[in-house]
Amino acid sequence: MIGNFIIRTLILNLLTFWLVLTGNEKSSPAIKVQLTQVFENIQTPRPIQVLPMPGDAKDLLILLQEGRVLRCAIDGKSASSSTFLDITHLDLIDNAFEEGLLGMVFHPNFHSNRLFYIYHTLQNPKRSVLTERRVVDIKSFSLDAGYQREVLSIPQPYWNHNSGIPCFGPDGYLYLSTGDGGKANDPHDHSQNTFSLLGKILRIDVDSKSGDLAYGIPAGNPFLGIPGYREEIWALGLRNPWRIHWDFTGGRLFCADVGQHLREEVNLIERGGNYGWNFREGTEPFPGKADLNRTFDHINPVFEYGHDQGTSISGGCVYYGEKNSELTGKYIFGDWGTGRSWALQVDSSNKAFAQEISFWVNDSRINPTAAFVNGKPRSPFKPVNFCMGKNEEIFVLDWQGRIYRSI
Figure (cartoon, rainbow, N blue to C red):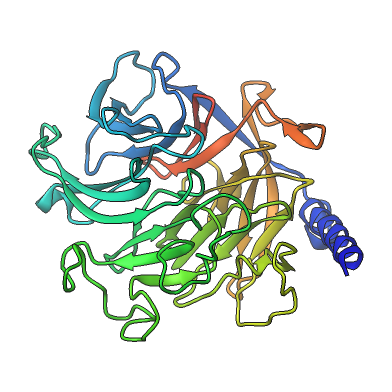
């Protein structure tokens, strides 16, 4: 059985690799995208997110995993910055690889309520926390240091698989992805456990309260009133989403889910959907489970790739800018391990076609083909996020401390 499983996996890896390179039948050259490095004169260690400030503000925010949020000029040329938020005094990090400040989002009604939300880890006990903060006034955009409200706290058994970057959907509700709790194999079976908030996508109402909760459960949540289910759950069966992204124009919720040893996947999230982990990794049965033959309703990824192409997917965003027409309407994402990046076109029937992206600064490609050393990729470029800017252009974040913008 194991031998057959390995053979099937190798065949699937080769087939997926061939499809990506050939576009199913035709050769498809990589899309060449020119970038420029920005914020070169500002220290940005382990950047996690670039977030434009609401309205007509001329600045943007840069989230650093260590726990700081910098306010910088939107053109990216200035050597000066200010600190908008600093939570480094909190006990955020035990292992700096996946813990820390992991995301931020503005409330849809920010201009009237001045609220925003940050998602981060805390220690002793180890947990992931969604906290509501606000600014004093819109004009100064200064932090109201005296106000914070803990919306949600989720216990974490291990340091990894914390997911991150909450977002508001077109319905005005907050969507939050959570990892399976960490370690390997989902040892506590959190992802399929409907009593657990781990390994899920949650949908909550931050503007109301249900019972003793600090948030409301929206009408329309798939498991509302069903015994044995946490009502916050919107979808389940995920390993370590990095990250989710609402494409308002296309009406789709994308989720890039980091795999373990076999497959990296892009999912289109459906209400009440089960994405298979830890019985499946991508479209394959997960060999770490004793019962490989268990069948249940699950949704396959819309796109996946094997570990001959990458080892840790970094999700991004759908592009609607004006300067790179070849990317219009496509989901832009990459791989943290190899630096390979793709533009994913999804048609009306949810069939997907991926085309590789080569990123260039002047005449130098910043994501060349990675070398594999002892089976592990070595790349000079580690994309951790792809963020939309003020005019729908893309910021490309390299976890090693560099930030680029499409031109």
